[in-house]
Length: 288
Ligand code: GLY
Image 1: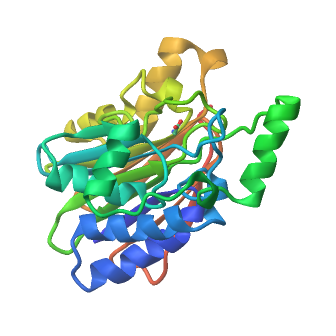
Image 2: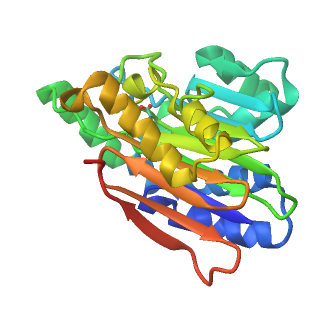
């Protein structure tokens, strides 16, 4: 049993996952429940996730979310989804109850309606803080830096591994912009013979490198999660050059519950593995 989450604000999610896996819940249910708490919370929206996240340049909060199980072919995602406070729950319905893998924009919203989700108006997705930041963006073209995707990886008691990611994406992005998060191999990847990985950071750049797929393939060749993540980051730097390296954090877990990360920026992540008294936080320093 093990759980891993991106950034320090994943701490309550990893704590919740711990309590759920210890009573035998499936990894996918753990990811969905823990993610929903953060997505739906207005305060943690400031970390660019779900309700309370920053809107796009037209003022609309559009979210991306995805879920991948370790069993082959088990993937579901939504992108540029508006009006739903728990986008990862919709992504799970795409995986479980549709013929598709990824639904975007109004198509995703229509699917969410069919599945019984309440589609709220945009005002209920916004917070005063996000609205004020948007006004500043309109008036002064003041941008907000950051792409704080919440990524969660869970290995359950039965040995199932699931990875989920959720984000409201780049603040004030172009309407319809989709980042790395809902794209398999980019924002997330899982293989139950090996482990799973998730990325966070500048999704427009991350998606060019399929880092989550790459990290899992390196673990398949025998690398530890930390070495796999480090190798992926170094490979990207080697290809594009240090000066063009963008903001990216990558974390991974293998089927033994070992975890690791690498990053181009200071990257806190939280984790718990069987036998640990409490959920711990580790700060990954930028690659040099
Ligand atoms: N990594 C999240 C995004 O750029 O949308």
